[in-house]
Image (cartoon, rainbow, N blue to C red; front, side, top):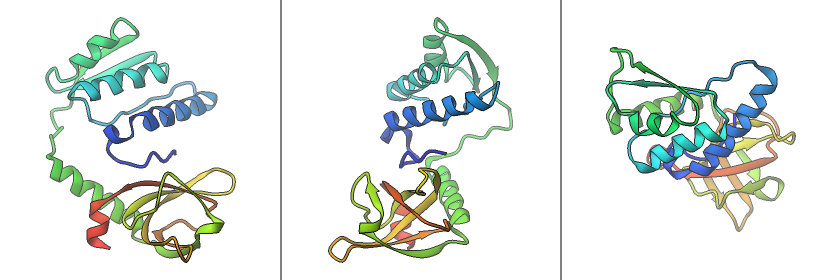
Length: 191
């Protein structure tokens, strides 16, 4: 896993591309087949551009587009001259969700992940903090001394003057590096 700092691809497009490129490269060393299941953001010029770049960056051989009608055609049409494209109908069981429903599902997933979490108090001087100031409610990528991604956490309190950071996380063990992501409004409301 690689932490990119947001669940919104439009906010972290370049980081997302680099992370997927790194993960695909790693998996190709271990596997004969690597499948990338992308997010559902496909409408609009930015989304189309990101998907086309993604396919090229990870050096895909095939793209399988699962579409309800023709919503992927702007992307698939641009890719047809570059790689093999297969169009398939999406399952009739697929249900479109509203933005609110998707937000609620994300909150449920975070809640489940953090269900067994504890509060860690860290000395800011002993942990490398990358990506900005850790504001309350910010999601964090937590890494060990071996550069391995350990999991995520949420900032509860950050006191720059006193040099301490209080986070909520299920991660156990030594945290060497923290990458600060976006502030999640749901956490600031519910913490």
